[in-house]
Image (tube, rainbow, N blue to C red):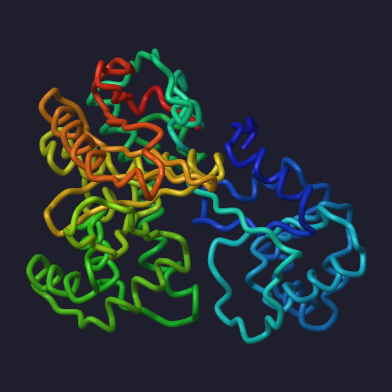
Length: 424
């Protein structure tokens, strides 16, 4: 990639290297881990270089120290191909007694961790990386900062120029760095190519277990149909039987989902458990999203035109794209994203929670006055139930929208923000 687009994790990586001997960057293939690490690395070892991969793996077993020699920070790309490197790097960090020595990148967890004897505590820092947000790819103008919303500003301003057709395209294109500068048709093909690589190769390479391609396809279709839902393996198996006229037992579903997690294709979102002035039980199951909305649309074999023709489906896929962006923005603020649901049907799509215990409540709506008002009503109802005698009140309430053009604060204090205006 000739022109490097700045990533939100650039600054996080630099900070983590200041505080630890090594930083491990994990995330799906093709999201830009290596390119980002190369911007700060002074030397590089590409473990998966076809010309030297076998020699690299052999050397890692015989004399790993030879692979670690080079100017620092030294990038070890796809380190998981030789798990023995982990302990060797930990040993080098201890004996060099210097910070910022190594950057490791991995697009899967190691297939075999028996050769790793040390957790890396105190020596390693972990950094998650995902496909580009709309702000990173240039589709969001960044006029509204998520971080600034925690200061509860009296007014915000922003104008998004994204319309329904553009949003449908961005959902299907995804945040893959290579696709951002491609012409539309070619860019859309990249997500299908990524999907094909997952079902035919990547899901098998993660642990050397050959999996049935048709079953992987059916599973991914079911996951796409159930984005953002606390769907158990048994329910996924039932959904596959109902929609694909075939069967997968619960154990097989669980094992396939576990493999997809290991290659960072799907990512769970934990449940938020606040103190409420209500006896209604809170649902504590994690929800699940693809790491990028384009994987979901590719799994269903649909494109922008299909989304425009089915706005209900587009709404779910829009939510997946927004969750991707919110996760990146939140982590840059030292926070995380959770969801809330109770048995009475009250829910909140995203709760951005910072380490200092401040949090914001977010409802995600594609657009339209009625849907936005539904989101506002849901936020108000949840806010009224929070027991502020036992926990802080939320720093902000926000409806994150797609087609609404303006960012503003309502008279009731709730922020309306188009995704095309948001940044970290």
